[in-house]
Length: 171
Ligand SMILES: C[S@@+](CC[C@H](N)C(=O)[O-])C[C@H]1O[C@@H](n2cnc3c(N)ncnc32)[C@H](O)[C@@H]1O
Image (cartoon, rainbow, N blue to C red; front, side, top):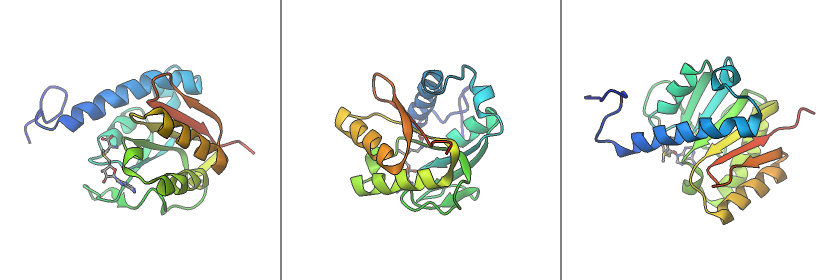
């Protein structure tokens, strides 16, 4: 596959959007978690990328020092696990971070509720459920309310409703 200087296929526009989204997510993260350097924040963290698509964000997290598992209903690589956001095939407390990008708008409200419960279950105490995507206010409020009902506290959303960070209490 022909790629450009950024390592992207110039004909796949989604990859550009995906990269831009990841950059905005990283820029917003310090406001949510209080850590300025993503290399420090993600180092050695176990990250689950739900709806990982082609897995480009998995590579980005790996570059930041994280140990990443990708999951998708249409796995595109052998190292990506088949699964649904609403029923994560992992034991309780398996991950420090459950992450998704550009996924919620593809899920029904019932699936979003189930996903929030599953993310809570799959996270360690103190773990973070992180979402990046473009959201209208109604959907953003639904996600934050649903997350709080699932047990998350200290929910964060940036002012233009792209970056959402929800904390699993330590005890
Ligand atoms: C718009 S793509 C985003 C891919 C990637 N996260 C990114 O930012 O480039 C959405 C992905 O979510 C996957 N997906 C859709 N519904 C899903 C579900 N219920 N559970 C897990 N993955 C799902 C799709 O197969 C697709 O790969």
